[in-house]
Amino acid sequence: MTDASCAKDLTDTRPDHMAPVESGAPCITSIQAPQPPSLVEPQAPVAEPLVESEQPPATIHQGSKRHKESKHGHYGGEQQTKKQKKRVDLVKPEDDLKDAQYFFDNGLRKIKPYFFKYQTYAKGRWLGRPLIEVFNTEFRDRDNAFYERAIQDGRIKVNGDTVSQSYIIKNSDIVAHDIHRHEPPVADLPVKVVRQEDGVIIVDKPSSIPVHPSGRYRHNTVLHILMQEQGYKDLFPVNRLDRLTSGLMIIALSVKKAREFELMMQRCEIKKEYVCKVQGQFPSGVTECHQPIHVASFKLTLNTVHPDGKACSTIFELLRYDPLSDTSIVLARPITGRTHQIRVHLQWLGYPITNDPLYHNKDIWGRLNGQGGISEEMEKDLVKKLLERAELEDELDYALAASNVGMVQIDGAPNHPKAEFCHVCQLPSREDPVPDKRVMFLHAWKYQAKDWAFETDLPDWAKEAAPPTISETSPERDLLPV
Image (cartoon, rainbow, N blue to C red; front, top):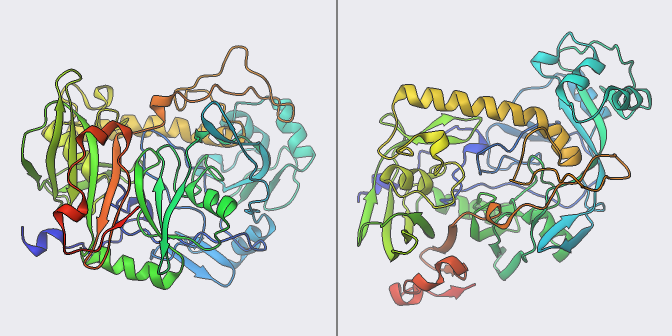
């Protein structure tokens, strides 16, 4: 394999949410301890549809051209006028950790509901419509009387001001609502810091826990848990994993150290190994996949094999086949670092990860489940269908952030007919997510470079197929087990 095959396109200007995920591409994001409120751009509601990748947090993103840091804080995407900046300052969100009260129940880590200022720029379809009409039609989890009282009491504001129900929404308006927020639970598994040295910590991330605040998750995230329970202040994730993916994370404790790792990633100086459980009998020996991958939809973080895509290479090796379940444990070595690279290549080969909610779903991809690729027409239809579903969930994201209750089933946990009601927001609770909705059989196992090597324990579903350790395959390297 030539050096060119592993070269990362350093001119890539994709949005941050397209940074490679399961391949451990650099994603240097500053998550800092609570500070006095600063000028922060509110983020539009971002649903968590069928895609399992993380979105950029509303915090300083050190590695992005699209995010600019000023003395006032973080700005993303669009340039703001002074008028907009002033408006933002009026409704700046509190993002401290004092309201993070964790408790554990039924094998889950949960957060006691807390008050939170939800705010967003007015969407195009809201313009020219009365404020009360927008809330009644867009956020239908509560009745008209509730929103009338919320507007009257000043819990719903526009540009930081209390307005009337008949206020007509204008372009660049910022709509804010103080809500009682119910975060979804995550697995009751420790976020283990298994090693700390030379300005980095090595973390073994459990499945189901997002890396950083995004969408419906805020405190139930790896970074907030580390800050709240272990006292860390400034954290800079070097690699980023999907919410359902488990395994090794390298988190720098300074920008300087994070930059060092980012450069190593860009120069392909870090070798990565993942283990996964796939459907079917994977070919014995070593299988190489060099199919190019392109972004089918930035909004959905959906990627497919495409002849006009970017160069992409993954090396797979069969570890064990189980004829009873017709599944295989496979070792994956991503050479490049594209979004969902391992998952997309496995789908194209016809051996998708067994419980991949996006790339192993015949209801979405059809009878062949994307094996061998799909046509341009099919891709367009696929994206259209998924965007329609994403738009629906986007409309409900506000309600989900407030109550974790919506018009559709999310995380496989419908409202219980005898559910208890929150005495504050008067909305029903939801049943806990079922275990098989908390994990995907993809685990970041080993990262190694010239002078170091880190590895995590294998998950239970892969332990019977454990391949040789790093020390056995690379005796010249210093082994730093985690």
